[in-house]
Length: 243
Ligand code: SF4
Image (cartoon, rainbow, N blue to C red; front, side, top):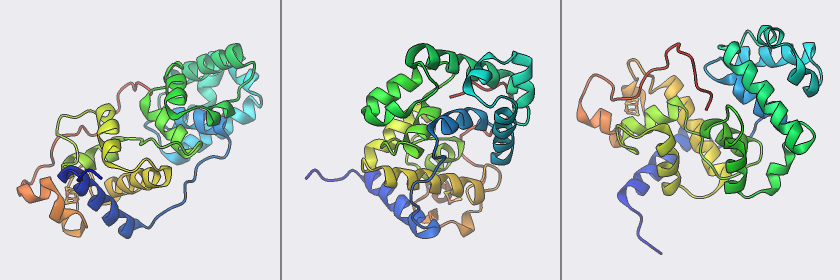
């Protein structure tokens, strides 16, 4: 067995600390893969409550996926208006459904379950408007594939601790963090959830609550004694690229 690098050890220590702080969860998500796929698009830069309202309103007005695909664009935008940037998300949803019907004859992505992680990722990221983050969320939450979604909270917290460098993008962070973690969907789900929650509740963008943080003895930012948070860009209202 190869010796673990110091960064691997630190990543695993941080993971264990947050396991203790937040508790280990079983993987959960929407049971319907199409709901998870479209819900993930709607969820970008939107609260969970607004995502749920947008999805429900869309399905009430357009009960079948064919109706969603063929709806006049302004009507679909109106149906999902509680999700931020509906004018960006509605065309992506229609393009994605068009591709699905053309390729598979139906709006159903259950076949991804039987593909390898690499094949499933490759197919998903070839869809219009679907990038690495959406793909990893869907593959982990719905199909329990061993991938790691890196959202703004996971990115910021792992950067401040020093698990990734200050200039590493979320896309690169995905493969760097994966290289230090077991290829196990439950481990990766908990890593994602715990760092997400920690970023929301403790390691917030403004004024992180370091005195209450269980990671401060291994955190580069805290150990540096700086008072201004390191790097990472706070989320601002700008036209999003769905990823
Ligand atoms: Fe974030 Fe402070 Fe905890 Fe470091 S010690 S992870 S900066 S809250």
